[in-house]
Image (cartoon, rainbow, N blue to C red):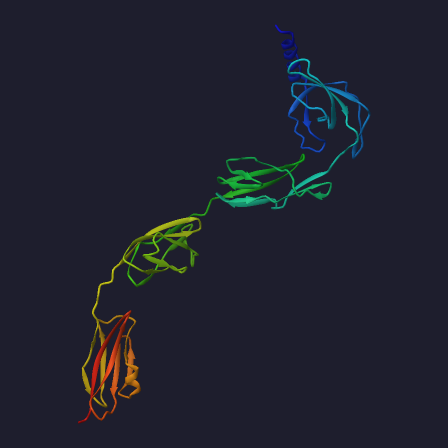
Length: 361
């Protein structure tokens, strides 16, 4: 068997059986994670006070299988050792010679979660953990924080301290910063259930109808919900913020209603308005100093009858009473038979009729 291979296997087994935990670091101010193992030789006693390690010119040899670089550090037994030389004559094995680092200042780190001790959120919601990190009493403006969930099936870490509720339950989020940690308990509750009920609508060209959406939260109707709307074809209908739908032209389209993250889409049909011929019903003449009543036929809401303003000014006729689609007039005294014009207004339609006032002759 190849001699180098034999030596490698022996050292590998020795490290596995007797190796001590170490960490490799670029500097003396790094997160420490004992993720390596090495055989440590020539260990001497080092002196430590409350704030710093003091150099004793001690040197140590670390035999390991992990590749290292000059001037980096090995962290072992709560101290940093600077790499001064490397022997890798045996393939895959590194004999690392180090010197106990000169005075190494020990920093004090803290991390605190400002969201209180516990958070309640619902399934599907997210929350950002507000962490304050300090180094030697000063706030670290750009800390490197690690977030770990005790149960990723309940709470998962999205990014940058944002956590998301997955299922109902409780778990703990641990946050780590330079070897210190803080924790917070998060309770996940059942998500609210939302629904929108709304029927399809029909209206005529030129008419308006109120869209009536019933919004439910956990089975209870919500009064005055704030909904948003979109229309597939706004050339057929428009809709106001209050849900008033106006028919513009004949055709069909859809309206989508948005509320609390859910959507309800309804069908809208706009019908062509049938042509209706309106007439003014009443006498075609009446005597002066007598009354006559006129109406629009067929009767429709928001219609009106009005006398030509010129005839009012000429004192030919006087309006006695007026209501929707109806007017009562009094013939004024005239010296000879006279005519006046009566107009009927229905929507955008206008109908005129000539009425005679008969004198006493």
